[in-house]
Amino acid sequence: MATLTCTASDLAPLLTTATTALNATALSEFLCGRFNTISTKFAETTYAVDNTYLLFSAYLVFAMQLGFAMLCAGSVRAKNTMNIMLTNVLDAAAGALSYYLFGFAFAFGAPSNAFIGRHFFGLRDFPSVSGGDYSFFLYQWAFAIAAAGITSGSIAERTQFVAYLIYSSFLTGFVYPVVSHWFWSADGWASPTRSDNLLFGSGSIDFAGSGVVHMVGGIAGLWGAVIESPRIGRFDRTGRSVALRGHSASLVVLGTFLLWFGWYGFNPGSFLTILKSYGDGGTYYGQWSAIGRTAVTTTLAGCTAALTTLFSKRLLVGHWNVLDVCNGLLGGFAAITSGCSVVEPWAAIVCGFVAAWVLIGCNKVAEKLKYDDPLEAAQLHGGCGAWGLIFTGLFATEKYVNEVYSGRSGRPYGLFMGGGGRLLAAQIVQILVVAGWVSATMGPLFYGLHKLKLLRISREDETQGMDMTRHGGFAYVYHDEDDPSIKPEFMMRRVEPVNDASPA
Image (cartoon, rainbow, N blue to C red; front, side, top):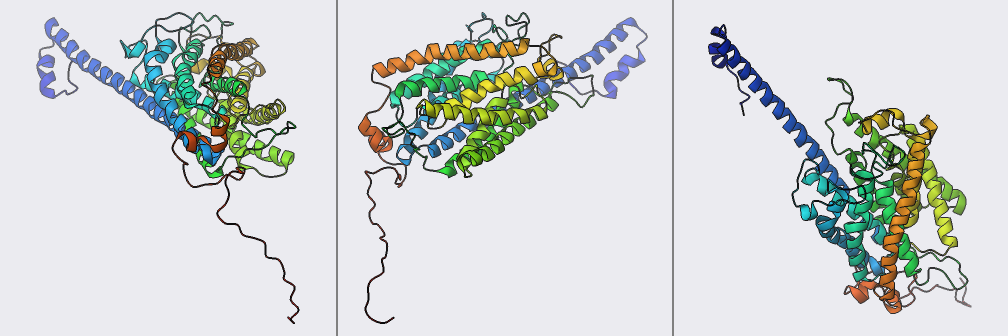
């Protein structure tokens, strides 16, 4: 390869005798060689910047695991803290191996068919031009373990450790990768990047995973919680709901802020690259602008959902509840994840407002059906994720859809934006397909574990707490208010007035 350096002594011999055809050819080769070297360096720099951006986004998404851990720990009772923290570590560790061996190949193993990938098992023959680089694998693994983390919240405080190992490996190694192949791989039957798309000529727009990640994790958790049945004491003998409050609102708030921070890698990072211009050369507008807009829509949706939940719950129950606000915020994030890149900022406010009411409604239905989910994971990620897909089919704009999913014109876009109903129909198909696929795979798995007595812990273990019975002791010295088996070492008694005949 030619060097980038060029001096007068290099050009002088060629210019002084450039009258001959031979030296004219030599001069052309010399200059073209330098220009080609410059072009190559620019291409390498672009590749390096894009990979660095994707790696940084992967680190942010992985940091969400810490947010999940804190949120889960604060939402359960103190006697199960170590158990739920360990399961969050397990989701990442077991998910890494299963996604490395099978999951990534099933999801993005190109070339493949429309249903499932079939290359790159154990990252063999990877990196490749069609499959991306190692940064892409790391980013997709972070998404896979996020789906597993959602499920662990639904079945918290009553699930055997071996069940976590089995379901986490199965979810990240097979169930989730197949869904991500359908909607994110260029070969997937419902992918918007497929040139000959089989789904209404459009494909489903699920940019960062309202359906692929959140609905998969939420519906898997739904089946686990239904098959396990509620925790002891969650409903009394008359069927009335009894609140089994988490032991630390501080951990819940900390986890929520960590998840909020990580979402800026989850949504904007899903562009995968940053150095791409949407206009003519020299324009300030490009993919970097779309990434900034995506961060703005994400923020507005979450904040709107948080405020809507705050005032709605104040009207419904009569007090301000920080835990409800945190869940509302996360519900707004889960909903906007699908259309964050293709909607206007004002539409994100609509998304967040409706997402808050979807979550409130799902919680009301869950209570009526005596469904017990300690973290409201199925309602939050499943319900709000489904709303996010519908929202995209209604509010996706033509300009942004064509920019983000470039390749052909005339793409369907949001119904309310004048784009017809084809995109909305594709979004509804995705909701039905994801719900059906996860139910057909995770439902039988949880039922089989239940029949083999590998799913739920014993009544005695649940009453005492898994930290003591399964993990060698409590995470820290703490007494749950609702645990009658623990007696305080001392009790302060009320001081009553004493009859005294003596004068004051």
